[in-house]
Amino acid sequence: MDIIVGIDLGTTNSEVALVRDGQPHVFAEDGDPILPSFVGLTEDGRLLVGKAAKNQWVLAPERTIKSIKRKMGQDVKVKLGDQEYRPQEISAMILRALRDRAARELGQPVNKAVITVPAYFNDGQRQATREAGELAGLEVARILNEPTAASLTYDPSQREMRRMMVYDLGGGTFDVSIVQAQEGVVEVLASHGDTQLGGDDFDELFLNRVCDRFQEEHGVDLRANLVSRARTLRAVEEAKKLLSFHPFARIEEEFIAEKDGQPLHLNVEVSRGEFEELIHPLLDRTMDCVQRAMTDAKLLPPAIDKIVLVGGSTRTPLVSAMLEERLGRAPHQEVNPDLCVAMGAAVQAAIIGGADVGAVLVDVTPHSLGIKCLDDSMGFPFEFRFAPIVRRNTALPASRSEVFHTYRDRQKEVEIDVYQGESDDVRRNARVGKFMIQGLAPVDAGNPIVVQLDLNLDGMLKVSARERATGLQKQVVIENALAQFAQERVEARDRLDRLWVDQANPFGDENEDEGEEAEESDEVITGEEVPSLAPGPREGQREAVQARALLEKADRLIPRVQAEDKPEVDRLMEKVRTALTDRQWDKLTAASNELADVLFYLEDV
Image 1 (tube, rainbow, N blue to C red):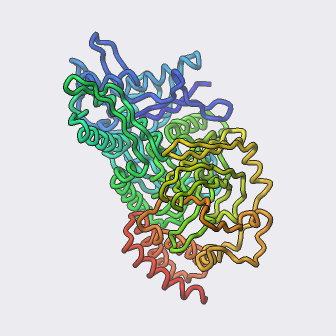
Image 2 (spheres, helix red, strand yellow):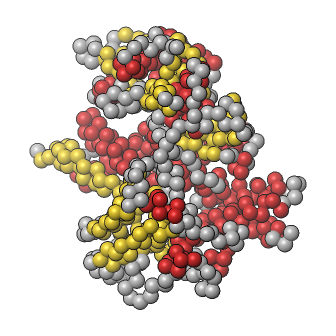
Image 3 (cartoon, one colour):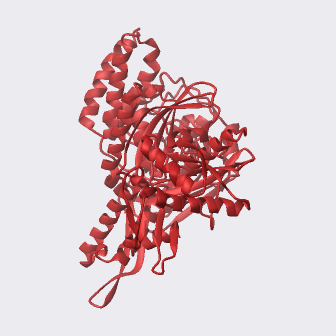
């Protein structure tokens, strides 16, 4: 039987994959499955494809081509060295490099492929992609929509009808598609995108921020020199990746520049909050596309069964947060977003070849892991707030950290109390373990403490807490953390009244039987040395908490709504979600009041 590989021909990165033993495998070279979509020529005329061409691009752009995918289907030519090429010829060079990578690992020729394209590609762009495959020596078995490929990695043989939103934010482009899948048939209901928006734009904003700070301090613009710019760009790219999992990242480059004969070094720390503030306007543009796709598909958020994240830039936590606020459900990112499309293309290739393929198997954490902290966003101190750090369905192994702050002046110690579960109230979750970190610096409230959770494939959890100012650190290792939760699952309270009871009485009902786990968590710590941690204050936090509670209440009351009134309730709920996502606090208050008025009457039905 002929080998048919799946290829994701991306704007910034490309990959090739094949189904083996029922599971898609992405071919790697030197341990890296990603091939940068760059093509170049050396000074002596040798062809470069991939990482070597990407490294050359900043220093020799006249001999390097990137983002050729944006020109596919156009009647143009691009110059490489002293020769001119059509876009499909450049793409063919990338495809041939991928074909040869697969052939080397398999030890035999590869002649057939399924190649993916964006859902918004027109017929001319699709034909150009097919021609590129043929020029690379491949028989193109199928041109496959990227969102369809992504959906296949999660369930290739879905029997019941499911609607899925595929949010694809790559290095160079963004698109969002709503697909409907049933019994292996996947239909794209709507698609929108922005071909000039991606992770490269995040990097450029980040680069400018770092360079501006360096220029203010030293009077030297790192962007003025190609080498210093290239080094800084690589450094901010790495910092961006770190900020996806940790609250702070340090950018360090020695001898980055020179002034008055003296070497200058780049050494700056950046926070996730600073980075997210930079990119928020760009992500707002993606949310506009999400809304247009929903409108074109004539669907409301409750009709979406699953949100799938594709593209490396979706690892930015703000992406998931904005989608969850807008659509009311957490996105899925269990399958590596960089490789998701290539793996789906491999699944489609296997199906064409007659193989029986199951859903991609990924080890994930079945429940969120986090710590107990104090929250006063509602106007009173609530000592049982659960702050998730590693969220449910995170692929394993996982390493995540968040920053918290001491609550009292001159606080000498804090208790790190670790829980598993999905409730905002730790008393409904299960305690995994706890420890104290003592000897903190005698400073004002707000002393930052970084809490990090490392969870491996065997369920071993390492919890560490570090005082940023002094480096004071303590950690504990918890064996079989995932199994503990299965054995100690706590009965949840009645979902109908849960959030509203909490808001009326944040310390719970002292006469209510909470079970053994809740009795441990119900202790209220008092006195001057309260070992409390609190998240940093955020504008609109109270409005956001109240709005989320209101939306949850609306979801519970929807079954009581008459058919003719349901569109109005859905409209008001969407109005609240939009204001919440856009952080327009005045509009959020007004929209919440409108929805609350309607729900008041529904409660009496």
